[in-house]
Image 1 (cartoon, rainbow, N blue to C red):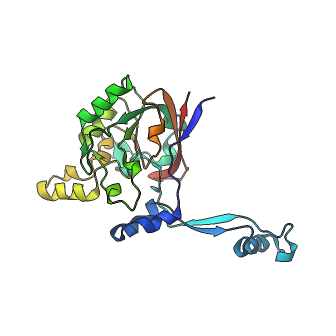
Image 2 (image 1 turned 90 degrees about the vertical axis):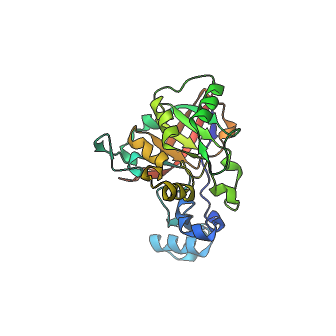
Image 3 (image 1 turned 60 degrees about the vertical axis):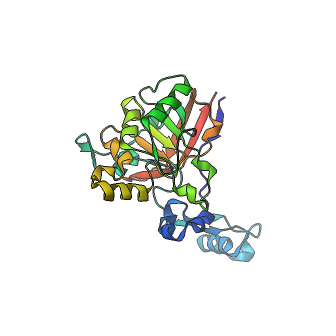
Length: 266
């Protein structure tokens, strides 16, 4: 039986408060707000009794049930799979696919880890040269349908560290470099696939080039791929020779969904 390695962040509502004030509105991509109903507490007992038409003194063991209500949660919350629709409405003249259009077979793929930590710098581009050097270390080429996971080292930072928001990012050119070789799933341990928003905005203002805006994500409109962000534990993986499953919640018609991402290592 293969060894299972969890590559998924825990969705902890306590992390919502760790965001700096300018990013407080992004709490919905960090974790949902959760209202907890504990079986031994008032709300758990009350809800149980409301549904079953009984009183607290009727509870078989003095307890109700456990339940939770999730609110203020984005489809791009935590470790999640981006469907092509996230990047634009059409790819190659066809309607861009939603998360429920993607077959499970497309989300269970051979994996490669490209460890670019020796060369990346905060808030700077992950270059084609860096990717090629990291690929050489894996001992094999990218093949059609591979899941390519970029290890930037960003998972060592927490949301209270300013460097958490200064991720090295993938550009249009570096993204197309991977998809042209056959990669169909593009993963990262960073909070985002692209450069930080502020860096892209500065490039646009200075150059007037609209292609500088969110160019890593927009690149998949030229060759379809699924982007997976906020992964963790990539350091526990070999560089190659494993399978990885990306299993998103089936949210009808959505551009993304939180996923349980698991590597299967023999």
